[in-house]
Image (cartoon, rainbow, N blue to C red; front, side):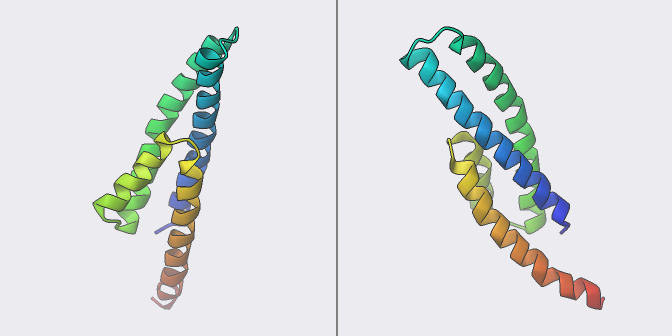
Length: 112
């Protein structure tokens, strides 16, 4: 597996996580605090998060299929972009695991 697959996943996990936190704050401002302009902010951030979450799903699925994860783990990673801050924790755990796997595979590729 190429490291670029992991890099794409990591970038999208962070982008999705930041946008979801912004969306949560926008919702609090819109419905809880009833601030002016919060509705427009929430609209823009929700559109961005929605489209970029689809890109996150593609990158996470690509990583999971190349890492040969079981379905349960794949679903866990895919859903991480829907819970505020979960994407950061899941990304860290997944990155450590995949980087270790890449390091294991690297000497085998050099010998071949």
